[in-house]
Image (cartoon, rainbow, N blue to C red; front, side, top):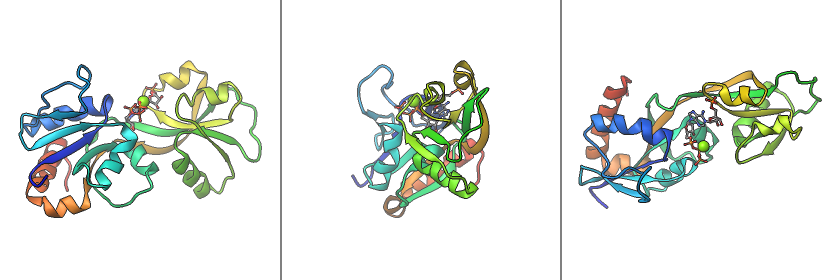
Length: 212
Ligand code: PRT
Ligand code: MG
């Protein structure tokens, strides 16, 4: 639609931390996705709507132009293989760290340690840079169980408070990346809807205290 802006976000911590930023731009959704089952939320601004999708799907919707804007974790963006997106702004929300972790009292690992993760690309790139051979085991969640049950030697996962690792007898071993959520923009929309999008980027940058 020519004069509308669709913003793709995931439910949960990103939605919860992004809405106060959008509210400072006077963009307020009419429904709460925690209470409503709607996947497209109208806002108080007739030309702006918010799409509620899985975190890992946000770059796909934006790259393909189904949404002009999106908010996605750097972890998701690093893992995503497309490259046709602008990433103009670090919003500084949903902060955490991508870490390598293992059992607290682990025995020495083999020549080619097994690493369980849902971040296969990030893990492959990280160990390639280190020049270390590893066997990557793809999981879709609950990575902490890998070392506990002997499925893997290590895991690569996000860590915030560290409580999840601790509760499962794991400790952090190496810091891979600092993670926060980024504003992403469809490249064609940046040109075709620049009169709408550029001021939004500028205003969001002011709100989060970043320069563009
Ligand atoms: O949940 P779903 O499968 O739908 O998708 P998702 O897990 O990708 O989404 P969601 O909403 O859980 O996370 C969205 C984004 O939030 C991620 O892509 C990150 O950029 C960001 N984020 C920030 C986090 C965390 N902090 C975080 N702590 N995402 C996940 N976690 C998990 C982590 O994986 C681990 O299981 O929380 C646990 C660790 O937390 P602590 O506090 O115990 O260390
Ligand atoms: Mg989750």
